[in-house]
Image (cartoon, rainbow, N blue to C red; front, side):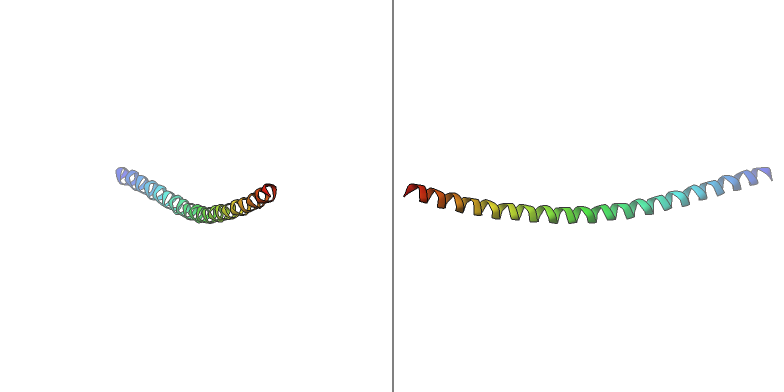
Length: 73
């Protein structure tokens, strides 16, 4: 009977460990999902910054062209 009790205790410990690992896995999956969402937002912000920078470069080129044409006259 003692052997059965030891096996039952070990089984209970394994079940408890499994439940804790399952809970940790769920938390990590949630955290991963949140991080993926944050990454998507940052990528959108970065794309917007790149587009704004490209527009500013065009504006700067226009200004330089105007200055060169004024100085060239």
